[in-house]
Length: 163
Image (cartoon, rainbow, N blue to C red):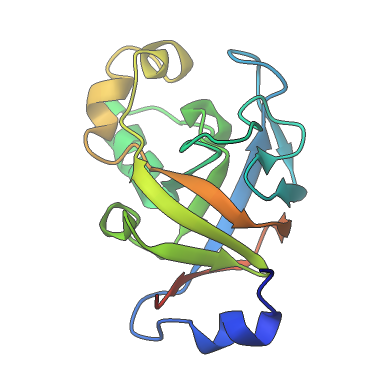
């Protein structure tokens, strides 16, 4: 069943957030450089069109990271970390992501289920530099599964939904 915009609005948890999308990054293949985009199309049970993670049945269809976590890692390492270097597709500001595991979030008409934390991996050492993985610590972001597709764009609010 497709939910309408009004039913999504009725489910917004007003006690949390909102955050907003700071940037969106798509990588056409695993390990390929991510390109920054202003708008992305999100397919239900797949992910972002044009990104290598776009596949059915995965618990990691889209990845999000807190821009504050990137800032803290950059400060720790005394370097500048471009948002796309983290290999996460969507950078969010203003919303703590780790507590959202098991919850649903909305970005405009898009609804996603937060399935798990996205722990920093060894690729962070290559993408960010030595110490990148440790600098992110427990703030590697979250993975989501897409329940309802649509379009996301930089500046969109990220809201937590009441189930």
